[in-house]
Amino acid sequence: MTTPRTALARTPLGATGLTTSVLGLGLMGMSDMYGPADEAESIATIHAALDAGVTLLDTGDFYGMGHNELLLHEALRGRDRAGVEISVKFGAQRGPDRSWLGYDASPAATKSALAYTLRRLRTDYIDVYRPARLDPNVPIEETVGAIADLVKAGYVRHIGLSEVGADTLRRAAAVHPISDLQIEYSLISRSLEAEVLPTARELGIGITAYGVLSRGLLSGHWQSDRETAPNDFRGHSPRFQGDNLTHNLRLVEALRWIADAKGVSVAQVAIAWVASRGSDIVPLVGARRRDRLAEALGALRVELSADDLAAVEAAVPAGSAAGDRYAAAQMEHLDSER
Image (cartoon, rainbow, N blue to C red; front, side, top):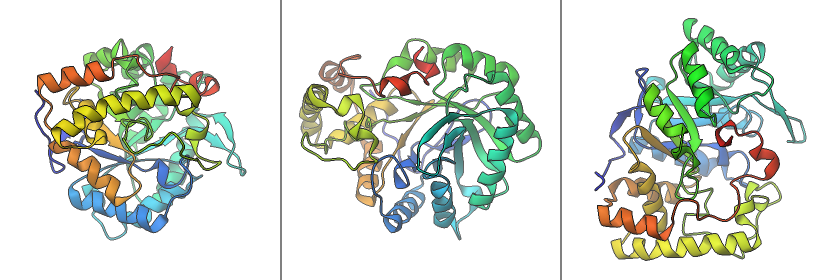
């Protein structure tokens, strides 16, 4: 049986001394990847999260080519900087036409990217700094070593990683303690369970789980005939296409039976399931609106009994999703999937 969490509860994230709220807010969709967003509503959503006790705020310098960091700065204006944990990803290169140009996590690029991040956020330090992906041209030891220099200089508090495999985790941790691994984890994205999660636990590395609702697919709100904007990632994601989408929405409907029986939403069951996987796992929710945030916070009050967990596993068995979580070209960048 799971123990319900509250939004005000805090938890250690890894073994480096970092503590955060038990639920984090991912900000990417407020600037990029999911079609148009309302800036005023985005800021109001961040404020609502802070007021509820959510302190872990995740951004990336390439989300909207700096827009996301500027948005976060605006949202934090007048707030206690020491009362939040800001997690920043770097390394993805963008063109002025919003195109993707590859990755650069070389030591010089790492330090330069942080300088711009600190300027946009108007802060003296970042709580967790992490490369967004493994740079195939730069040994992870060099990237982590560069961030370690920034830790020594006081610009970064903790080093994180994102979407890397077990071997890379070990190599990185041999250079400097790693606070957490940010990686997709949901009922239909469970590949980390085989090797990555056990390795992280062996090394004392926490997990910040993004995509807990599989980009809205597991929210219970997605419709098969929904149209996506041209810049919405989901318009090209294999799991949202044709027969794959039809199959995946059947899984959601199976989950809805369980949610209805408990008097909660599908999204709340999906989030609660991720939270149930261990106290070392902090779900990141990508709410862009206050009502969606309120729904996600409600998941912290959902108690899943052993029977509930068995029913969830039966409704959405591991490996039951149709389609990869990214298109083939993007899957090639995932060290965690090799």
